Length: 255
Image (cartoon, rainbow, N blue to C red):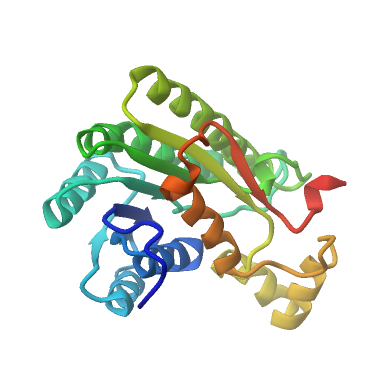
């Protein structure tokens, strides 16, 4: 792997790194010089991603809804690489149900993964990042955190909360003077496993075309198109950017 060293010398922890945006961002950051801890509950996919990167990566089994597993993952990262500068909270899932269709346990389960995990990651990573001289937290939200859908009640709620939580974390860190920034990223439909249910329902090509017709640019996005945005926020290039959101949505929110 070779790049321009945009995050050279930095240590990153990427949740949900076995697939999708997490995997793409982990691979890209390693290419740009970072050491990367890939975490996931998908052991096979996580190990495969780490092996693709090579000696600059480790894989850690990590249920992001559990505080003790966060503590263990952060400790394993700092033990392996000597510090922590970048946290990418990418683990999550979707759920397409209206408010009337949702059951309480589904609501709680989705918020545990898509929101509680971000809370835990920010809370527990800040001390390690501060001890390493600061860095950047990048929380993966969604365009669904800005634009609501009639059948995405829980997902809309969780992703909108990630957006505002990121702002609170950014303001806290700025007030503490710990040199940690925090921002959120808001992708539209990206060709990752989160679209699998659409592909199973309509077939891959029709599903991608159907979703693409909703986007002004006319297609779904690719993982690297979001990973480069994550890389920018993770790097020192964005040293004056905190408490804001990066929208990567093919123009859909401009309507």
